[in-house]
Length: 255
Image 1 (cartoon, rainbow, N blue to C red):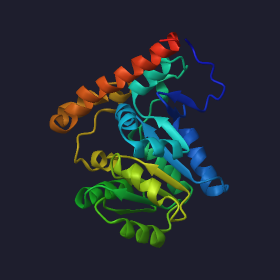
Image 2 (image 1 turned 90 degrees about the vertical axis):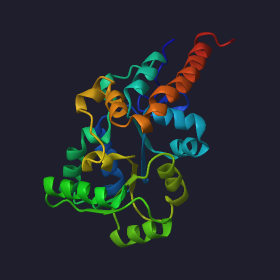
Image 3 (image 1 turned 60 degrees about the vertical axis):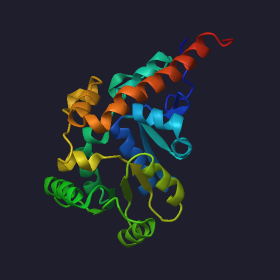
Image 4 (image 1 turned 45 degrees about the vertical axis):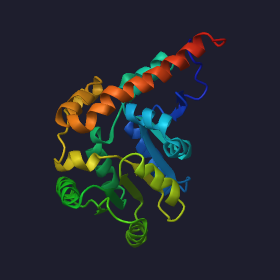
């Protein structure tokens, strides 16, 4: 059964609304919020772990409903969308690490102030220094991910960023956005998970081609087996079971 996609910018995968979007279009949405007075952008990503968290966590479910942009971060999610009948090209899978240089160059060219929240202090400093060295003139501030909300709000009010990159991990970052998004004037809030750990070298960064063929999980499992075994062996079974139920209901609505 194929879906007739009346709004190609918004498709439903297991209850989550996703936007088939490339990073250039994402930049345009960011520009629209900052420069043209469009509503605040709350940017989410969905990979297999995100699907699992959506099924298990009300906070994550509410966050996805509140998000204004939600892109395909995992190849599995693209394949699920295809299996549900959505004609999503595989190159619509993207993660921030794939285009991080382009993003920060775009920020520099448009003189956007960026505040990075998250990560351990030492690794955060390494990662931020690397980004500033690579892109001179970038307005990028940061604060580690182990502070109280009041400290973060003070930092935001002092820096007055155009964009907040929130890397507190799921579901903490989603819970934080829901609780605090209306307490400050920042046009773009983007949840980015553990991105700083890869930039800083704390965690091995899989080759970028691995994500394009749906194999990034393998490199992450090998590099962090104790932390990732549940995510890559148990969570997929939970999500796949739910997916098969949804697929069966579409094929046979009376089941």
